[in-house]
Structure formats: structure tokens, C-alpha cells
Image (tube, rainbow, N blue to C red; front, side, top):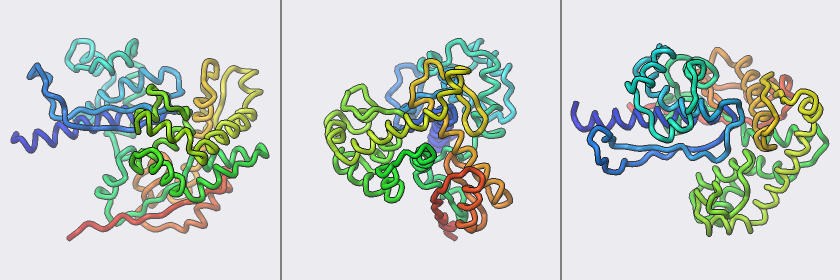
Length: 353
């Protein structure tokens, strides 16, 4: 194997590994992003890798045993790359016998795992059927892999869903509505104020709805992205602080609709019918569970309408082989969920000949 092939293989392994963590984190109610870079020089040739990666967790997952499952998911994703039909018992045996090495970070998160945890990570709700797919790939990767296809996304999905749920409680959300209507305006303001990139601005605003505090603390997720001084400027950015205050108020109103169930059963059920314990959960984690259920129902409506054309599902959209009637799609989603959402359409460029 020449050096170029070694580099591609090593990059593929680390990409699958970190994507596994991110898929598990997202599907278990959390939020984060991946960074992959050149690996530092190893003191032991047996530990030599050309690349290293990390998932930055901006919002913690909400489900039971979530950290164990997230910790396992990177290793499982690597194994599924070469062994799509990998068996949970076999993986557990390899791990326990040292045949598969876990990083210290992964091992700490996955401490106390069972074969049932490995089985759920392989074939349950975390990974796609069989080998890891493109659901969590960067959009540019999906473009390259699916030339000539049509990409549909729910505009500002969780923000739009929160506003819709708040409206049911007769709670107005003018600042959230303004962001959903013109997301680029606030993102540019956040980018300019923080000194970060446009992607950093997008991540910061998204992290707020998942419970990240608007703070300049060095330990905060915002400072991790744009530094303490950048985070401090954002805390003083009035449009962002107003949005943050409205998010918290809207969250309280939406959670009020679930108060009786929580008080009666100690659990909370989302629109997809999934229940989790509410005890010990932060309000932001409970809201994430609620919004994930609503998002699932939106995708179900889309699948029912366009199943024959859909080739890929993402967490807040999908890719099709043919263009869809967006007005009809929006109508179908509203009839099924009650949410009046905006759907964007983009055409992936055809492959160059």
C-alpha cells in the first residue's frame, strides 16, 4: 500500500469514527460538530496515525445511557466500515480481549457498557441500516456523491418548530420568527461581532436552542468556538441576547404543555411516541427531546409523500432523484403535524464529464 493509499485509508477511518460519535450524539438529543486535523507525532510507532479527530459537544444528549452509546459509536462505525454485518457479541469480545483498542476518551464515556448497548449502536436507532451512510456527512460531500439530485431542507428546522409549538400555547415569538424568515441577517451580525466564521455563527445560534448558555465563560461552548473576547462581544450583541431571552421564554411555555405528564409519570413523551425519564433533565434537554419528536414526524410526512424519489434522509431534510412540488409537500407536512414550515430546494450540480 503506497503512502497516498495509506493517507486516504487513515482519513476514511477517522472520518467514520468521528461521524459515528456525531450520529449517536445527534440522534440521542445532543448537538455538536467534528474537527479533523493532522495528528501530532506519536512516540510509539504502534500508535501512529496521520489524522486525529474530535467531536465538540455543544449540547449534551438527553437519552438514557446516552454517553455510553456515544462513546461506543466511533469504534462501532469503524468496524461497520469493513464488516457491515458485525456482530455485537463479537465486538464485545474483541474489545475485552484487547483486539480493538479504544481511546482513553471513548473508554471513559463507554465505561460500564453492555452487549445490549453495542447491539443498539449497531442495529438500533443510532446507525443507519448496515454500513454507515451519508446522513451526517457535510453537505459538500453529499453534493459530490449525489450529482444531479435535489436537496430539500426545512428552513431553521428546530427554531421553526419551537415557534410553531409556542404559537399553540398562544405565546408570540417575533424574534424567532424574524430569524427563521431571514437567518442570514443574524448570522452575519454574529459573524462580524465574534470575529469567527459564518459556520461558527451558524453553530452558535443553533447551539442556543439546544441549551448552550449565552456566556463569555472560558468553559462555555461559545468561547470554545470564537474565544473569550468574541464570546463577550456576542453577549453584548442586542439582537442575539433578545433572541436568547425569547428562546428561554418560549421553551418554558412549550414545556408547560408537558407538565402534567411529567408530574404524573416522571417521564415525557414526544410526538414520535418516544418516552424518556424527565427527572434530572435540564429544561433544554427536555425541549430537545420534544423537538426531535416533532422533526421525526415532519420527515415521516415527507417520506409518505415522496418515498419513491427519496435516496437520502438527513436530520432535517432529504435528497431526491426528481424535483418535488414544494407547495404540496408543505401542505402534506402541515396536515400531518400542524406545522406550517418553509422548505428550501437546491440542485446538486451534475458531475463534470
